[in-house]
Length: 156
Image (tube, rainbow, N blue to C red; front, side, top):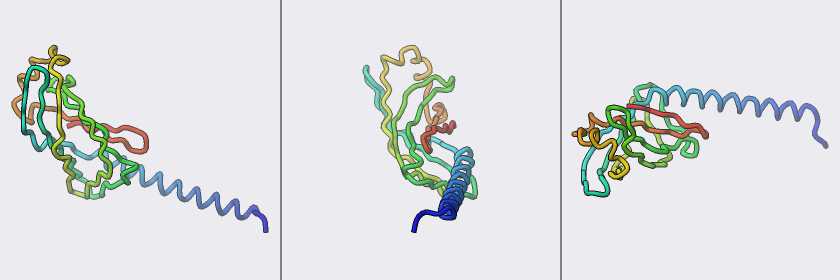
């Protein structure tokens, strides 16, 4: 028994339904991702010498929506975090590559003890801004999430 036209139509319909279902799911993730908040929640172990500045940072992702944000780890990856001063000048980049980010509805997800190293010699032109950093409130954090090959930015 060979492949008939009805088999092709049925297979095409199933593929079409699957694509529509997945597209709807991705759109829902994008909508929820746009509402996520990334806040620094821990700043400790500050150390500085002539070559580098280093500290540990915790970043909490808050989900203020009624929808869970839990895409598969292959689909969503926290790629990196960019630290900026109040004037939005880049201070450092933290490479995270953490998959399986799951933020429940009205819940949170904590990225703990991220080690931040800042090469001081490269940031000499920005040293005035670096000296003014006294706490978490003085640091702007941009979290870059990769979803399905695209990058999305959450700035806080």
